Length: 407
Ligand code: PMP
Image 1 (cartoon, rainbow, N blue to C red):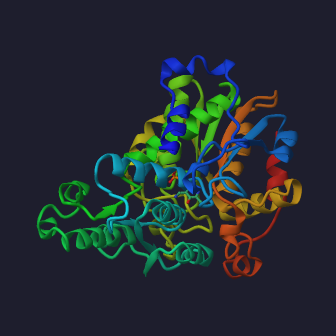
Image 2: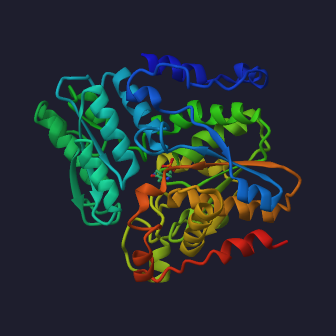
């Protein structure tokens, strides 16, 4: 209830929003927060000093992870809380009754769901691809989730992790309500109709994901910048962040640019630029390691989901970011700012620099982005020299220096 009150405070209708400029951002340092869920959201906005100084443009980023911030360690805490809140409101989940949350995820969302599940009296089953960073698996297990690892597969394959999660939720619910499995197999509504004990969170299709950002991250950003923003830059995994924040910011100020930061191997860049989504891996003949063939975890996708569909009409421009650029930016930020961020955050910041250069901005304009999680979730990949060597990804900070110096 406390969280709900707090959430409502930052969820703004358009009419309320006009009052925003006079209102100071609420700080929470002197608040007593109600349990771990009370810590989620309301994150600080930080100026990235090195990039801002070099560009003459303010690069601001929502710090979504780190000590005392979203306690599950990423921006996905917001989504996990919202999905569970909404499911409780709809009567799909009842605390302390043996209900179990199911999700197919390559990392952050599962960790956030496992944490919120524990705090709220649920069990969690998380299905993951078996090639995701090992630290995420440790985090899931440490939070008491039951983890099932499966081989990476295409979404049309029944053994793909999202499909298995849906199937496990159905099986679990059917143990209590045998009619469940006989009705339409892939519908969330099936679970709704049953005395559902198993809840398939389904972040890719679940609009609560978008709502968490439309009601939370977006209004926070608006308030923290007093609406003085030229552009919002974000990658898309499920699309929840860019769709929710993008929609909120555009509804406040139509000419704010919404820009996609797309890692190599993802099909979204092509969809935005050329109207067609094709699997980059098939075109390039690269090997199939992960959902998207890149060192970046959490963003990039090769299919259209409900949350991506919500995002597409909002996106004004897109930037494709390569693995070497992501690695260089991650290392550059450690070297110059002491910022140890994850790969999707680094990808976002590369796209920020590209956008500033493309637009020719240098007069103190402001653009905002998201630091989605910490580098600690990526020890085995972006910050691991041996891994990068084995994958033949160079560590070359001059990529960023050149990018910053181009006129
Ligand atoms: N960064 C990381 C590390 C993530 O796990 C995710 C979620 N998949 C994102 C960014 C992207 O967020 P979204 O799903 O809202 O597009």
